[in-house]
Image 1 (tube, rainbow, N blue to C red):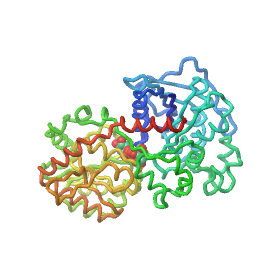
Image 2: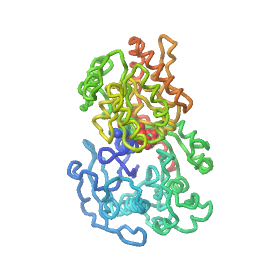
Image 3: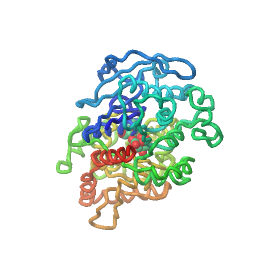
Image 4: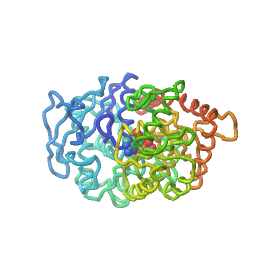
Amino acid sequence: MNIAFCSSEVVPFIKTGGLADVAGALPLKLKTHGADVRVFLPLYSLIDYRKHKIKKSPGIADFYIKVNGKNHAAGLFETVFPDTDVKAYFIDCPDYFQRETIYSNESDEAERFICFCKGVLEAMQRLKFSPDIIHCNDWQTGLIPLYIKENYAWDSIFKSTKTLFTIHNIGYQGNFPPETVKAGDINPDHFGPMGPIEWYEQVSFLKTGLMFADSISTVSQTYAKEILTEEFGGGMHEILEKRQDVLYGILNGIDYNVWNPEFDDHLWEKYSFDKIEGKAENKKQLMKISGIEFSETVPLIGLISRMVSQKGFDLIIEQIDKMLELDAKYIFLSAGDGKYEKFLRGISFEYPDKFKLYTGSNEELAHRIEAASDIYLMPSMYEPCGLNQIYSLKYGTIPVVRKTGGLADTVIDCDEKKKNCNGTGFVFEKFDGKEMVKALKRAIKVFKDQTRWRKIQKNAMSMDFSWDISAQKYIELYNKIKS
Ligand code: ADP
Ligand code: GLC
């Protein structure tokens, strides 16, 4: 089966969040399940060409991509994922991808991803790659299902191509002004009131994907149900309800070659459950460089996240005084929203022995925090899947999470009253700061009893969320869509 996997970010080339982790791992697993899978992403100037040995695709002449009535010079580049023969193709179009950030608030943001959507189809034509399935991910790829059915339908290479659109986060919709219809060469009839691309008088790339894809999936079973509700559907719940017969939830896996304390080169000391002492060494070292005094009996609470309201920062800010009163230390790594950063920077400055905030994006530090922390905090307002709680389980870093989306599907609550609990973390239900603090208190209490804590760590570390199972589910879904 030929699969074209399209994503605006892909590990190890470029990443802002979990989408990149998924796009860098799932295709490799699909390949081991026998699929001929090719990955497509934009050639942002931020990508390190040399490091990734990215070269012009041999035999493919430069071409043009028409966006907003103008032909933009374009080309195709490629490399293989490290230690594999899976190809990644990069759509080069300097007019749109030579920017300082991957995503922007610039007025041509819609054009940038029109360019990407057209670009992947232009690339497939030149590669003579006839995909059975184009697997689209998030709004940046939302026009592909429409283009396949209309603008590019003339090409026999796409005659039997079907599309799957995966929602990684319904909160990001790619809604743009009406001029986008023309810029994207979209049939204007689709933009009538309640038309398949129209969304409150704007053009929605997400809605387009949802309306034109042959099938839709999202990244956990709970989120697949949640997005059918007004609370979680980001306004699109009625659209999804109409397409419910082709909506599936497949939980993300994680790449245990990258996220595994036994082999993690970023750590000060590698460890496993049987050599758990190594975890304490990581805690010691991280606390030392963070200027926080180490204590075996005081838990370190870690958090690594984009700094956005989705991730529950409002609860943290509301409850920060209560959190600082707890017998615990905190190390956070986060990049994003200025208001949260400003506040937490202040806390970091005021309580240097209790709370440390690192800002920016730092892969090595992310691994080190996972390893060094005793507890991992993830109080998300909503969470389509969430990867850090799954990494945490593997690192024996007990997650404290809100029961939503993928968090509900991956973390089993511990009943702290039971001596021998089978849980893997501490779960609270309501999106409420006090509930979060209560869950943290429960975790800290159990932490003080190291025998019980070890049992929970053992439960957590023996969970298996590898991609094998999920990749198999995607293959089954692709087959279903094809038939
Ligand atoms: P989301 O995709 O919503 O951001 P996920 O939990 O699915 O959430 O994935 C987040 C990914 O981004 C994880 O791999 C996490 O380690 C990483 N990450 C988040 N913030 C940072 C940061 N500041 N530095 C390095 N990695 C980060
Ligand atoms: C999104 C979601 C996150 C999910 C990730 C990968 O960014 O916010 O929950 O894990 O995509 O699917």
